Image (spheres, rainbow, N blue to C red):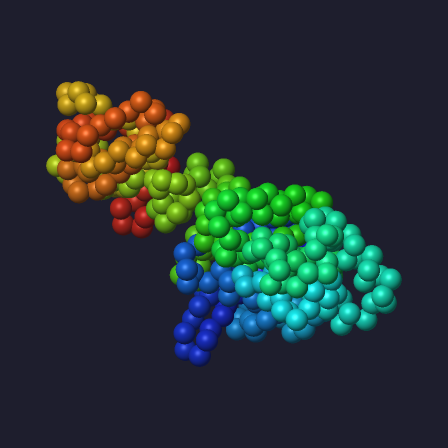
Amino acid sequence: MARMTLSGIKKSFGTVDVLHGIDLEIADKEFIVFVGPSGCGKSTLLRLIAGLDTISGGEFRIEDRPMNEVAPSRRGIAMVFQSYALYPHMDVYENMAFGVRLMGLDRSEIDKRIDEASKMLKLDPLLKRKPRELSGGQRQRVAIGRALVRKPKVLLLDEPLSNLDAALRSDVRLEIARLHREIGGTTIYVTHDQVEAMTLADRIVVMNNGRVEQFGSPRELYERPANTFVATFIGSPRMALLDVARDGDSLGLAGSGSLKLPRLPGSEERELVLGVRPDALSVNTDTSAAGFRGTVVYTEYLGENTYVYVRLGDGTLISVRGSAGVDLRPDTPVVVGVAPEAVHYFSRSTRERLAA
């Protein structure tokens, strides 16, 4: 069992506060992803869980046992770093065996664990090779294998795919998802790539400036973002955010006209932020149609879909997803329609979600 509780976790380096009171409850066997921009504190939080850095404030528990003062080697945690950190003079077997030898296991148990991990990771034909004789994906699997042979309660992965090319990232991502299902332990994975977060996680922790912006399932974050930061960070292409003014049942956008929507937020605020994802927008060359007026900037053909980028009258650049047959030239005047059932509303002042 590896249920974890983080209560008011803080981290400071000298006078610089990096984490500002993190509260999380992580269930046993969950796959949790920390996601956020560079410098948001996600890797720092992972290092605090691993015990590699000291906690400045708050309490970290595993199964109700306080961990703040427990040495990293006694936490039942294994970590895979962004850099593979393999010993270049050791072959794959020796790299995987190094950590478990320090645990005092006998040779037969070490061999058994390496045999299990190498078969799981398809490394058994490579056990006698040195790291220089391996591809990037193979080295990453060795680093994961070295962690798995310790049979940890918790597996931590710090941006493990960042050094791989796009095709290999996809393959290794599937491998990590499979391993989590087979091992059955608790996994915490750090990335700045929201696609990795959406495809791997049971729940996602979205971080920004040392704080948790939202903690929930991929579906919750995509369909009900808590604020404009989460709304634009989760989803690709990003959600369009439009500064609109409410006038009765209409929303006006500077320089682009107004649009009537049947469902407006209950808040009395007049100035709102309207959030709409590309697949909830449509583009129309009939300039008398209902919607916001703009001009085509360029069209991006991606095979099955085409994205049309439109500059609205207030200067906002938005992307509209269309079918493969859409072909609009730059500078074409268009009207952007909005699917009313798919809009999101946020407060202009707080940037928090408003209920409609």
